[in-house]
Image (cartoon, rainbow, N blue to C red; front, side, top):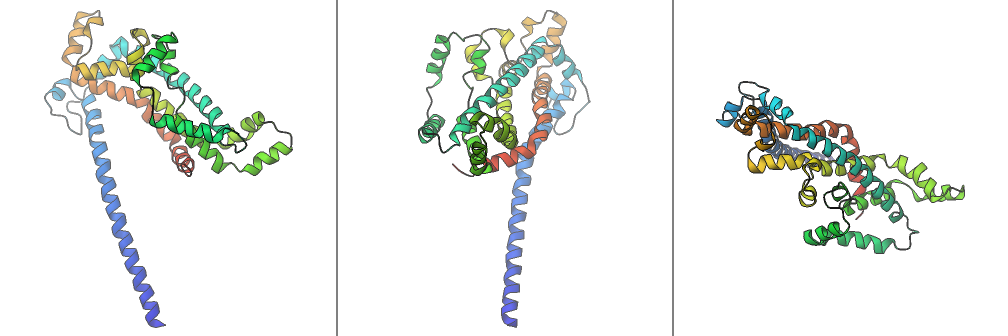
Length: 305
């Protein structure tokens, strides 16, 4: 008996030591990945708060050099930044509301086993995740619908994400018992009332997840606007940011003040970092508020395929 106890104790010790080694390796790998992501972010933030001359000379690494707010002041004087901010906030808010409503209305019937065309629609959704019509057919469709150079060209083409519908459907299936629907039906509750009174309150986690997905997508989106919009008054912030990053300069021709145009052109490098920070700041502020729902919703929504 003593030998058996010693054998089990040694086995536990070996297992615990191997677990510690594994956890240490995971910690080191995650720490390296964190540094790979964090160092460029710190460099961007430090450059945005540094003197433009220090930025252009490459003296900035992780901390600001000759702390200065000149870049932010110049960015905030650039009218297109405010215009892009206004448009992006509108596209993000309105588009996300439309996306979440359509996604929930599609996911709810697909989670009901009584829905006759459930399997066919699920296969159709999965097909669209692999194949698409392409850029040119999409452009021709938007053109035929007379949505070019309008806000609908930005909002409607990405109205629903098949992936978000699937994880929402999985969440409803796994997190809301079927007995609840049967009891509600016995009490005379209609499907619409069951959806609004029971499904929605119990689906707050997945609603927070898909809201975050859609909001981030709209905030970072520029390709649809790049294809379908010609009016600068409708451009989102990311299109102006793209022009700055790709062309490595601001369009000084749209600035009436010649002195301001020279300042903007001379400080282009520092301005790029400042506008990157300004463009990403809202999402960085919102994400911590939905982080707990984000993790919970993704894990539960991914139980079934």
